[in-house]
Figure 1 (cartoon, each protein chain N blue to C red):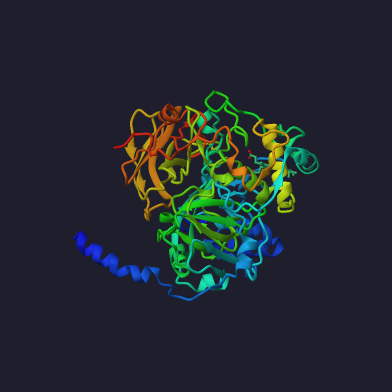
Figure 2: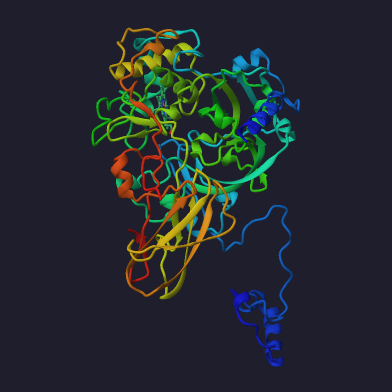
Length: 177
Length: 409
């Protein structure tokens, strides 16, 4: 029985891998480059560039502080805090922030690049995204004021909760019948 | 209501005459006072409408809650207590956005598929609609539905507690069909799906799921185009998986060797455990059920017969059984599942009940076809603690007071 199934599957493979409908048009490398903003945790996809907290502070003040607060403290019930909470995750009052919870610095960069500033996203050039990321990480005590973040160094930043994630364990509640 | 009334005898002549006069003299009075069982003349009805509207008396609506001070980052909830059956009208389908609803021109919108593929392609909507299509009824539930209940916050109504849940029939092309057109390289293990909303919301999907024939690139919702707030003109539908992975306003699929670790699969939609570790890629929505009538905020106006109705659903297939307790969990009896019972769709259940007028607690629990039994809140907290938040699926009891008022228990 299993062999028959296997044979059938093998026969199906050529059909599965072949395009059948010839719909869509080839994407040019230029348009892929323009659309592709993916950043991987190992740094692939990051544009060449650099910035540190010194350069990031004025950008943060002018473009981010109005919502997230001058020191990244957020506004309760209105805007998320971008600092604090390190060491609280296993306590009765866990505080999840970019600093305490997010496992990769590349995700912080990617989130700002995709989504911030909230009302006018996609306006910061790469160096500004590096700089403002550095400033937020500096507010969290993760990098120094001077440390330059680049496409090479950003993936190496040691985030406090880097090893804090585990795979899905469900079904974890065993009330089976 | 009038259709349920027993057929009236033919009105006597004098009465008929009086009504006819009244109809002429004050049309609206006659209209509201006569049922459709007598043959009193009524004025010609309203004109046809090219796009229908519900009756003006019908007022049920979604409740909107913003989660930050910037509009467009919150959710709207489906009024489950007022709906019938397993399909949510598109205008009442729940919403959850992270940067508002984008206005997308379907004539220029495209889907780019690239990365670890043989042949990166760009598809217009016309291209997508030319593929062989299929339709599928599924539930969609936000991973954060009932997020507060674990911590002991019980909203007043089922709309408040469970309203990030809807059911719809989605139409589109199986994603696997389209992925076949680009040809996957063997190293392609994940697929980042990205929306065209302002925040370019993105989620990584394992390749086995992307190739699952159940997964759709959907452009249809309940027989017409998707609603803007539900991803117009193109979205991902992954039956049984948390709402956030069903990326809306789809503009790009990037085949990769690893997950991208986007903010919505690390900072959000991950579940903090008591030991401080968090579980990630918790995709499937586990079995759950809730009584929608009678439910919190409603009032039973008399003793006697009441039909208890509700919904059950599971991301792992079909609902096998729903049980109802009307005595505070002491005894349980099987409810009737209403056909159709479809995999990964809402399943409606019904349970006849006579209320004796005394205070009691009613609740339901479901078992899915894998044998998984919906847990109580206590069982759930014992394992997950108070802060995992997402994927809460505990039982939801309702207290019926002697006054008939229904409250969360």
